[in-house]
Length: 78
Image (cartoon, rainbow, N blue to C red; front, side, top):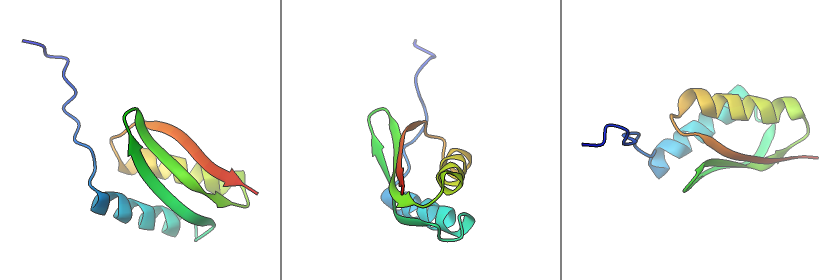
């Protein structure tokens, strides 16, 4: 019996929407068009912001709230 199976469940679309809303709250709305999506390798964050700090807040918040590895933080800093 293989005991190294990944038992982590992927979050549902509704759960991702809740986390998106919480991240927007934590970042004081400084991220526009924030989207969290799942791919085979993990979570992808997309959107845009004016500061690297807001981008970092989004990534760390997602890491705290979800048990899914961050595959890419594609939030664009303008």
